Image (cartoon, rainbow, N blue to C red; front, top):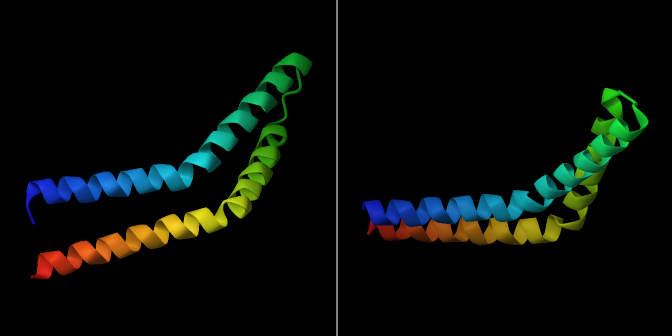
Length: 89
């Protein structure tokens, strides 16, 4: 396996991770920001107030994007098996 092939595999892996995890991370960040602004405005300093909405939002996005995630991960797995097949030859 040459260096260029390793770079292609790693780039593909990083792109897949960012594509799959991106929606959940963005939603968690936005919900956390909104809750933090709410807490700063009302001067409520409760740790669970920011934790519970983020968990609920991430679970909701996970349920909504489950099909997309499964498709992306399946495509990535098939590409990796293809790389293994070419390395063996």
